[in-house]
Image (tube, rainbow, N blue to C red):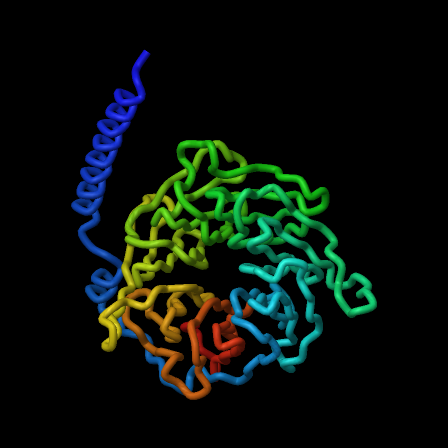
Length: 380
């Protein structure tokens, strides 16, 4: 029987071989991928998006949280927004009037994520209590005006970093966690249906920060992790990841599917956003900014979203910037952080309304802002 020292030595040799093969594969892929989206688009004579500061204006500031805003989500149909904050509350807003329809006090104030159910009648949230709480917005409030928890999804062994309902399915929800796994839940029973990662060798090797479900094929979702990789999962096959995507050099804070469902974007602590092809695994484009003049460091990307057409990529940064990228030409066409009424702190979350007519951003300055597109812009 091999000793512990021999096992460690064999493991080190095997790890070195894997890393060597991975580098050879990366170099081979790079050789075959002789261009990117930017160079191809320029070769085809594509003109950059014409975007003026008046084309995207701050029309409303949602004030009501007393702590940093960590997460937000729009309803799929109506103009409602739910936000989660360091103050330990979920607030449901009417985006058209700025009025609060619900202010839900949470049992655990350390909330990190929130999401609307597809029908807009329930909201989910999760955080450092390692659970995902479901609230029915139609429930009767108690004497203090608080809504009771209608369902508690427990089973994660680490904080819940992200949650998202499966599109058009009120009873299915996926969470990601600091325990390196994602879980598909039956909201009705509170039971886990499938666990993605964990003891399986193809799972993440560090905290999972974000996830995105493919609206074109709801059996597929991607997860972004502190191991600097994205993994593609099929909810019908939980035992292994379909594919692993490499390229980032830091924690991946945000993942979002491209509107066509064939690609997805990422945002990372390495200061870049990237676009990947889901089927081939190729990295199609890197969206990289210049370092800040003051400290010569790249601000981290905290959250991303695509316009409905996919031509624009919205990216929030830790220094308060919010870039609007031309996805084809990899050029910044607007920085919301330089506009009037912009945030005064880190952009922690952002999201586009279902009809694509408005962008909402959340910040550590305790506020949310709604940015409206002026006029009819086909590009959006």
